[in-house]
Image (cartoon, rainbow over all chains, first blue to last red; front, side):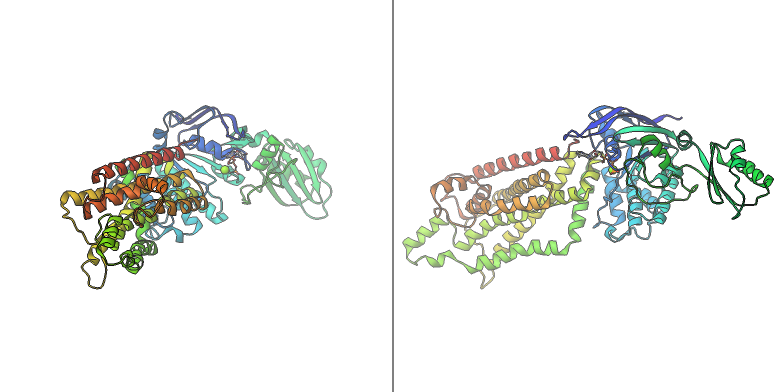
Length: 334
Length: 277
Ligand SMILES: Nc1ncnc2c1ncn2[C@@H]1O[C@H](COP(=O)(O)OP(=O)(O)OP(=O)(O)O)[C@@H](O)[C@H]1O
Ligand SMILES: [Mg+2]
């Protein structure tokens, strides 16, 4: 890993009322990484991000952002980071460009020095045409993109995003992430993001931490986390009326557990793709035609359930990269 | 630091210029006061024309040549309060919209945030005051209208003293209401408090009613009211020192004390509100 962008040790926040929102978490984010911070409502995501962005004082523990202690040198941290809040905070009475000029001024840039940068950013967020219109007339997606452009006008080293895509439709979300990827490529920023959306984390983040009740319950790469909960599942669909092949499929090397539902079989396995040829061969040998076959990766839902005993949503498996994009309400029990 | 202050002030002024209703209403208010209140009642008419009674009136209105001239300068104090009532609204709504939080997340100094609010809203107080003053001076030369007649020779120094008094009064009241903007977080609470303060501030001053119409205990409060202090500076400069126990700079210093205390309070509440918890 390259140098450390964020380093957190035993960070804790107890609110005045006594709520222990964050209970001694530790993690580190490498420079240039896209790090996902995932957890249900009230898990402590916003509290954590507020401490890292100097908007909230940690009760105990230490956080270094860009190598600087957030508690003792907050102004220096502020000039090196960008922040996209969950809610839009642009001034609706100002135009997009004026909002960006305001932000540039607050970061100590002169208008002359900021002008080219602002034009560039507005163009790359596809806001050039709307730049001189008042923000109150922007669509939700445009507002989010402006928020992003505002957050990076001073070229921060680290960008914090707190549930940045909430309220956007799936298309808007996909678009938003395209801009994020573009920013990463163009400006090499480190990104720390929180989200409820499992699919966003699965598809975008290199590493993920899962937080629940103020504690980190798991952390690692997507694949490593999935591995921990038991790998993939292969769905084999046979012609209707085919004989029972449970025995044959169970005998395939690498298959762990087979369940049958009519002519559809679910085979659990550590690595789905490599099992597909053997499963097809087994069916051939039994003289039964395979009508369809697909690999289901365990979603972070399943990971979450496995780690916390609570479900994020009903179904345990996602269809590969397909994205069901509802926000989730945690259920007790699971 | 200057970039930050400039950016914050620019935002306030741009918002202001985009709200014509705000501008027109703000500037129309003093005009209406002058035309309706001022032209409509003349206490002088209630007093018999004999020399003794007229001398009594002259003393009551502290040397002003007529009630309107007396009243016009009182109006400066009234306009200062009614215009300053809005000083905390910027902060209150920025809190509600999360804009304040976004500002705090930047390296701009907290004192710069405070200063930008103080400067912008003081401007919104000074502007209508100058309009009231300018118009009443002009009215004196318009046939058919009563106006502010200046009976003393006002030199450069006198004019400067009046301008300083206006500026300091504006800063004092802007700071007062700005304090509530930083202290409170809901518009409802803010307007409740503002409403509560508005009339008492005005009625415990000598802005509208001649000295001697109120009971003794109220008169001693009146003497220290910042509106009274500012109004005294102006009346003494325009109408002569005969009816005042102290020279005008004494009142000006008193006013300055108020401005320092109130802006100190506002700064304190601002730094409390902008502090990381
Ligand atoms: N200002 C506050 N005072 C007291 N308790 C608070 C405060 N802010 C948050 N909390 C509590 O701290 C806990 C964590 O809240 P936080 O906002 O960090 O969660 P979150 O993970 O961001 O949730 P969400 O997904 O709903 O945004 C919750 O129990 C919440 O009620
Ligand atoms: Mg949150």
